[in-house]
Image 1 (cartoon, rainbow, N blue to C red):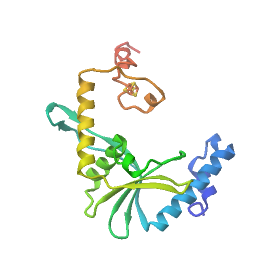
Image 2: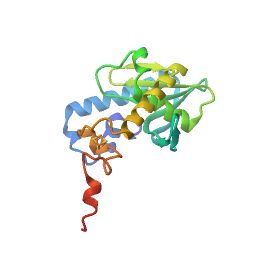
Image 3: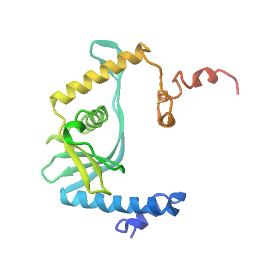
Image 4: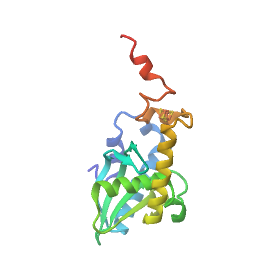
Length: 197
Ligand code: SF4
């Protein structure tokens, strides 16, 4: 049964991919599946949602109410621990995971926490985990008031700078996934959209 056999699960997950001919890919995927299951078991976690895409509603920006801000994120795994703690797991395939003091200050972790907190209003607290399942490494952080206030200040500054066009967009491979690509001045798609087809 694919659910219990990591290799069958991997093949089922990418049926038309040439990745399955790549031994390194298969090894990494197998180690990740096994490591992820082990992590859930030893931490007594039950998966509630996987790959959940969440988009918050727009809210006015404090100090600049003419601007709105919303967030979106795909939570790799949202779990509940036996004591009721909600755990949002971000799964990575890299070689190192940041220590808690660094991780708690990253804007990406602030957004991950904000989105999970907004969507699920956990009654017994929320923890963010960055997990490298293939290496058996993880960092757990509880985002406190100080990190929330730093994260909000960072986002506010960024939104105000974007509105003022204080810096030019930097194009790169991530543009392919960017939700702003149609209106981004670096791509000029809006200008091209007025040309009749
Ligand atoms: S599309 Fe524009 S805004 Fe989006 S990542 Fe690329 S350069 Fe940045």
